[in-house]
Image (cartoon, rainbow, N blue to C red):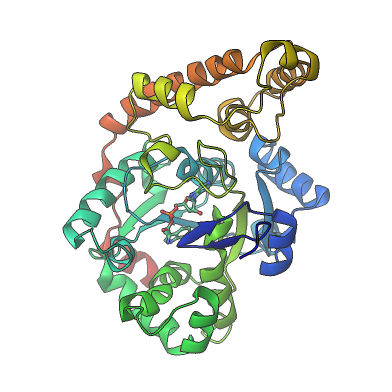
Length: 376
Ligand code: TYM
């Protein structure tokens, strides 16, 4: 791998992600101004994650809008591989999914892949990943989803429903395609090789179009699903992708749940947040105050600015003012960090209260109810 090269798969992120090249490599459709406007018109409001191009690409979003306006509508699906605590990167697609549900009234299925993380991580037992799944489910449910329209599936628990769908998918995905997509070798365990079939299964829970908000690292699974969906007589799953939030230390490879100091978790205390940002958040400021006042800071690489831009400051006039002041040198790096810390601490305290009080039983997938609904 040369210095300008990068790797991004569901399981690996190395080097700085070049999104222009990623669009070519993955064959993504960049979200045009026109389609962005259509989403806002249909939703009745704009969303800052779309406006700021954090959600930057899609597959068949136009088909979803058409189905919403003229056809059977659509359902939503997204997920989490429970390998650790939830970090702020995970919240991006979920926060957007919650907005989609509230604006379009769509049913949401949320998959927790305790099997995937067990296959992938040599240190985690199935009990560990199951327990983490229950913790991660709280973070998801705390974001304000409608319990009557939201169904959380845990692979090891809801396999009766998922297995027949995964089996249909597995029969049509061949080894050479998964191998080419994920770089599997002879030492890859066969759980991993089968796994894409399970991540595909929720796409087939209903016989109508599905929209999946997700980080772009997960796209390779659904490229395979999209290839086989027509053979199984289902619509191709539609996708809307977000860019990856960078790690605290600034590399634009993604924030990762497996490296404690590269991420801010929803379980972090105010003190931990303050320490992490002050100590680790990569600064785009100059080495001396005098130089900073003269040259200003770089908002393209400053992690505190990027976190505000991508998540913690949805208000456009406020973020633009911060940008202007930081780039002109009138705001120092330490001052910018304080703004981020304040927003993050306020957000997390509210989130943690909701996380504790949420009743996840209300959100758990009910196989009997699902079967009855599908029979109708
Ligand atoms: P997982 O647990 O790695 O990630 C959960 C979701 O968070 C996104 N994500 C990020 N987004 C922005 N910045 C980051 N640094 C960042 N890191 C992760 C991921 O893209 C994902 O959307 N195999 C999946 C679980 C899964 C799933 C799905 C994901 C099952 N079904 C359907 C999306 C859609 C996984 O391990 O995700």
